[in-house]
Image (cartoon, rainbow, N blue to C red):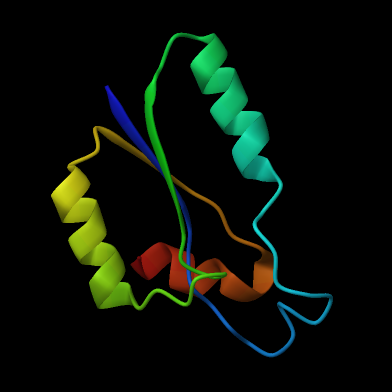
Length: 83
């Protein structure tokens, strides 16, 4: 099973006020998935890497994941819904 974890790209000026770094949920969820026996896991950090929505859509289409996990902090909730 192909699993893709995504941190959507959303720059509000406030969301990254404390810095811009990879989200902490990825190692926790990814580690739990690997412990459960899932090995085909990919993470795309569109926020940190400034990946545009159209480029992200291409990446998702190319990988063809069976499951997509996306997260959001409050300022990026609407962007997460459209991604």
